[in-house]
Image (cartoon, rainbow, N blue to C red; front, side, top):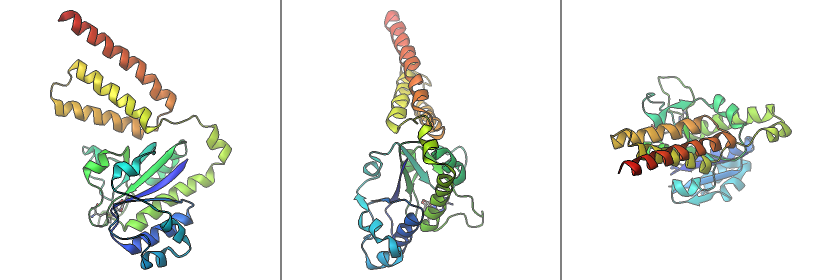
Length: 246
Ligand SMILES: C[S@@+](CC[C@H](N)C(=O)[O-])C[C@H]1O[C@@H](n2cnc3c(N)ncnc32)[C@H](O)[C@@H]1O
């Protein structure tokens, strides 16, 4: 499993440095910066990175979150605002639960952190498979960006220590984003042919729920493949019935 830390529009050099340092502490090397507001090679960032300047030097800079997610099989958002359960983009799991499930996974995982000023918006969270929220005091739930990165990487590191490499390798292969996306598209097509629900917004919501369900479940490739056939068949039968009736 390969982990990438993705920072969306980071605003403070001190945080960049502190994040590079904590990444190295927990053995994570890949840093992607989406449209950063400060340079990773700034003197202050380098000073706070201490022995991890190479992480700043090798950081990949991209313009959009889409670009950053290219090549990731699983993309996780992080938010201090857990929100209500009925806001799907913000229905969270905690970092420990996330880290445990992560090690059943083989692919490339992008962990996305938001801006210091306003976090990630719902449109960005929608692009991700699910959200992780660190439980904190309700009096002040939103953490400093670099502290949040540290806690999540620490939880992953703890799990890494528990599992030996051969055990990890023996696990079945987990589904990739593309494989799950294919199932989501088939589900969307099925609902379109079924014309259910009539309300298009509601239909889109059902598709989003299906995507969340697949993402949060850490589904095996074999499992997701087993959805394709029945969905495709059901859609074909429905289409045929419709054509016969026309
Ligand atoms: C300073 S916070 C953003 C604060 C912003 N005012 C907001 O309301 O979202 C910057 C980033 O740190 C991470 N973060 C902060 N608190 C967190 C928490 N309790 N759990 C998970 N991530 C958190 C998230 O990635 C967040 O986007």
